[in-house]
Image 1 (cartoon, rainbow, N blue to C red):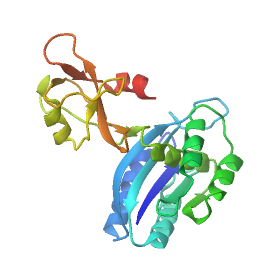
Image 2 (image 1 turned 30 degrees about the vertical axis):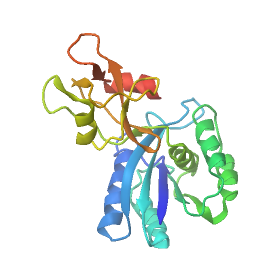
Image 3 (image 1 turned 180 degrees about the horizontal axis):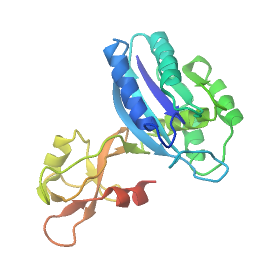
Length: 247
């Protein structure tokens, strides 16, 4: 059975980020024989003075395969309580993809959280529409993390939002390889330009700086920019450039 796990607002300035917590949580689930996590994604939400956040107001989500959903839910709740930062207001969302019927409503909530100030009541109302398919819970503080936890799952369901957790590094200075070789090296589904046109796998790309994959059509993919220097057909985006393009 396949599930989504969304978490938000677990950290503080001095603690590990929510993304690293979810990485550790997935590893703990695997080590305890409860499930195997997949791709972890980071989703940018609305940044406004009224919204409390540590640095960038992001929500983190991953997919997981498990035959013990009750065990996973209990383990996740306990793990977040035990590992949350002091003063944090964590939220947890677990979605049973096999039972979920109204995906568009959750996706709309996710995109709303990128441009509007939402409330806990908004999140709870949307979660309750889906019955047992969506489990939404708060685990300390004022519980505001449920907003981001649910929104992150909604954005993940869209299949076209967020960056994939982890940095892609070149193996040498100004490394040049084909797009196909780059995609194979990092298990990417495709590479595309800023208008989402797929780049030919035989084209060359200069991998001159660290970059990140994004979620596109539910799979990790890579944005490329036309290379103006003639060293290759394309070049990777730096992480700051990608932030402007994606968020």
